[in-house]
Length: 62
Image (cartoon, rainbow, N blue to C red; front, top):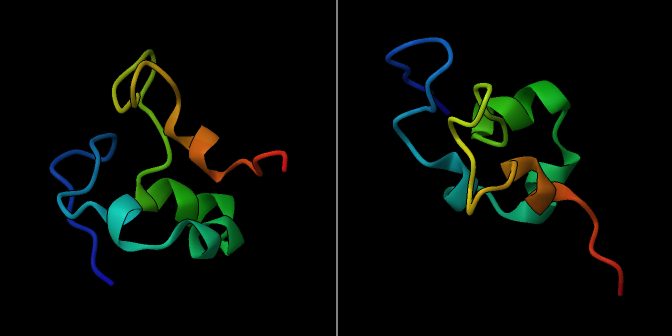
């Protein structure tokens, strides 16, 4: 896996949040989750539909 950045706070050029299955991303450490794109640069850069992308990793109630 390689991640390429323009600036340390900018999302990676490759969209790993689409290529890594959610169950696998949930198993990763918080640091790796951030590197996969499940983070934001405050106040809102990186938001998805107006919400933090980390919400996708939360367990959904059955």
